[in-house]
Image 1: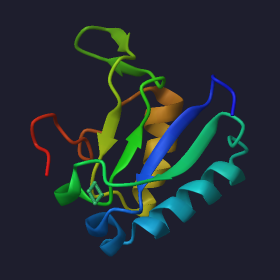
Image 2: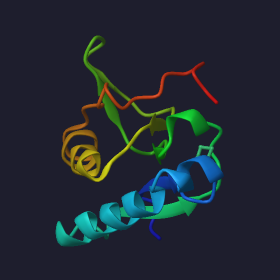
Image 3: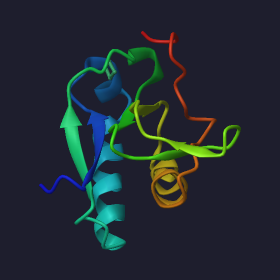
Image 4: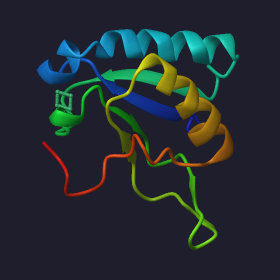
Amino acid sequence: MGSSCTKLLVCTKGKHCSARDSQDVLTFLRKTIEKAQLDYVLKVKKTDCLGLCKHGPVVQIDAKSRVKDKAKDKFKDKAAVSYGGVTEIDCIDIIERHISKNKPIKRLLIKRGKQK
Ligand code: FES
């Protein structure tokens, strides 16, 4: 995998997310990325519990992806972004809004300090 790839981690091994169909989210995310021919820059990986269980299914986008902070009108690229309660429809939003347009999806965003 090249260093320019953005990784999307889907918690499929944690018991809470797996009970909430995270495997389906992972499969749909992979199919959508492949269909859009973005699989050379976006990699979807299974992961174990990310410590955000009550928000499952959880998708975390690695720190290399960049999100525009509208308030400060500049890009942030330090922290990983975690989305919770992700459904198949949300996968399309993650790709079209977060990845392509650098716009975070507020309704899915897991805020820091609201873990487990
Ligand atoms: S079970 Fe998925 S974040 Fe813990």
